[in-house]
Amino acid sequence: MSALVRTGTQAPSGHPWFGDHHLAPPPVPPATIRRMLEHRIRDTGWPYQRLLPAAPIALPRASYAELFRVTAALLDLVRRTALETAATTEGRLAAYRMPDSERRLFMADQFLEERYADCVTRPDVVIGPHGPQFLEFNVSGALGGPVEVHSRLAVWRDLYADGQGRAPFSSPDPFAVRTAMFRDLCAELGVAPRVAVLGSARDQGGETRYFDLQTEYFASRGLTARFFEPEDLHEAWDCPPHLRYPVGLRDFTIPDWLELGIDTAPVQAALDHGCLLVGTQTSTFLSSKLTMGHLSEGRPWMSAAEQALVDRYLPWTRVLSHRFTHRGDRKVDLVRYAVDHRESLVLKASIGMSGKQVLIGRETDPAQWEATVTAAAEEGTSIVQDFVSPRTCRLSLAADGADEVYDTDVAPVLGPLLFGGRPAGVLARFFGDGTAGIVTVHGTHSSDTCAVAV
Image (cartoon, rainbow, N blue to C red):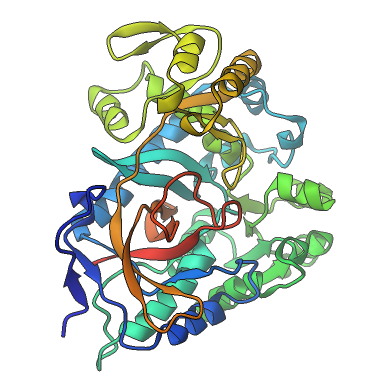
């Protein structure tokens, strides 16, 4: 019996991009599925989810490939847009009006800073009325997805495997792709394949399993790897040359560490002594929502094909300030336009995580919206973006304590992972009741799975 099931009559909010099939849940009790999913992700800081997937999200191969093809093309444009804002790091910090907290952890070698800024990325994509729309780009070694997709994917492969160990779907494993990225990075730099994983158990409720999973996988694939707390990071460079860790994964964010009171000085010392941590601090410019605004508005160096790509896959986005801009063929006063079109826009601060600093116009009181938009325009560090009404796909869910799984329509936010330019799996987050909005596991308590190709 095939694991693929024809979805049948598509929900009014569905979209053909998702195809006309979904994966039936594996033939085991829902409690077994939940137990396996929770066991794999245990002690990694991933919160309890009342609704867990009973299957991965199944995408047609063409749709799956489109996610990565467009991610790679747009990432190149994002990188070029960010770097062109100024010729130097100091110039970019000024152009982006970066807070003092982000004015640290740069390498002295600006070429290395720029060369390895985009090693790790995960855009947030929703499927709108006209197909995929890229809402933002997360470019950081600390982005969510690698551990989660690796863990979910292992469960689905175990549950769906046939007598020959084959599953009825395909997906790259993010750990395998990231290992290959670091192996190539070491070869490109001419250094030993020794990888430091830099983070803190204080950021994971005191547990180290989140980091241990990663270092153990690296080691199983022939790389020497070690997890470092910042206080121990001097041991990565203040030692005999053959024991040094010349490259590493920067698995933390500055805001998180500042909130926890963790000193970043040991990280700067490691960078100053030649340890390359990816993604580099220059990735902050690529992640900034302002870069999406500049790209959406168009750059003079873009070809007609590049402009068409942006127009197709990016929702209309503008850096908010007191100025005029274009909306189609019209010239509009941007602030006045944003105030008058509250129900069709979203306001986002340039830097933010887990859906923080995001205001959805249609869910906001008109007076509050106008006041917030006006204040943001004075600051010049926010964007307004078209609200994309997400389309749905069919997915099987397992509620905590339920004896049976059930099928429903969900509106997923898809996160294709790209490591060193290579596809590395797709994180999918969703609300089990099919609603949309700000979808984050930590911030708004959504559920997650991975998306696979069928």
